[in-house]
Image (cartoon, rainbow, N blue to C red; front, top):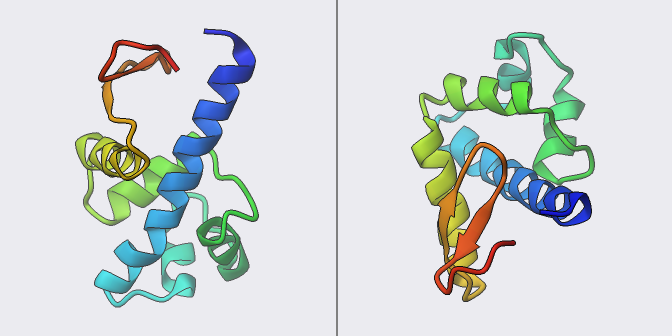
Length: 109
């Protein structure tokens, strides 16, 4: 996969994940400030706000911290992506750690 496509895919994955932080946080009745303090490397409340609004991208390590804080696993993470893709009429059926994803017709994104 060419690097620009991989970069766009990774950007979309991170944005979809970041948009899921607020609902996870609200489900636990947790403030942005509380989440910020629970991170392995604590961040400021404004950083959480910027992640949730996709103003600032987060690192993979930060995404893993968020998943662990909310007791979620990678399966949950990828099911969020799959449901988002279904809403756009493109079903992601297979992803690997190398960011190679194929849709239901076998096309690689």
